[in-house]
Length: 290
Image (cartoon, rainbow, N blue to C red):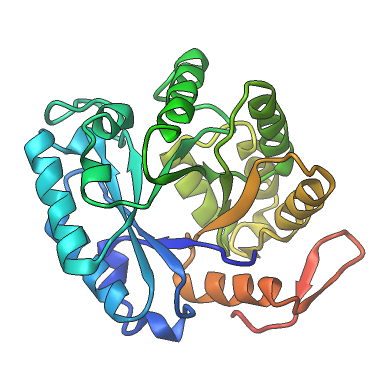
């Protein structure tokens, strides 16, 4: 959990009085771009995060960007106004692209990210597949991104959608190693939220096989509104990464689905070692995250 990243939407950022009350200086914070959003809101949040001592990482969603000129304008703004040098490039959850771009590779191929001095580029990883792409297309895209990483001046890495069980992630990591992937992996995990809230987000995001974990939990109505913590998932990933020196897993991205405050408190407590293993192999965190 050391050096975990997290994210906010412009809407949720507006409800946070001060990010410093929740996040430590230098924490990497992605700025989610939802379909139909105004990129000016992304710029506003990026500027605020920078001013509060955090590392802003704006999303560039290909299918929501009209053309190369617009992409150049967006990059000029976040770099010039917020000192951005770290971005996430994704296709974006839009069925019908608004312009010239249909995937992140087309954006990267413009060369604009290098021209604007972007030093880190995150791209999407899919441990459980994607409802928007067949597996073969995902593999082809990953091969392209690995090749592109050798050409760009930026450091590239994969960041995944959140999952609820470790086995699909570990199996995927092993397959990527066999396929020659060299990009580090930042694994997405769900923040602290009720089972009901997690189910809602998982369905909206097209979560794959590990969704079964939630549906099993949801059968117990008494658990439906209780707060779920990703303790077993984090412990199993840590053990796996530690015992597999060639693993690509290099960090964690925390999706604060139930709110930034309690997910951040829990994450820092684990990162600082303020926990003990319980009888079930989970983490009993010695902090009140409410």
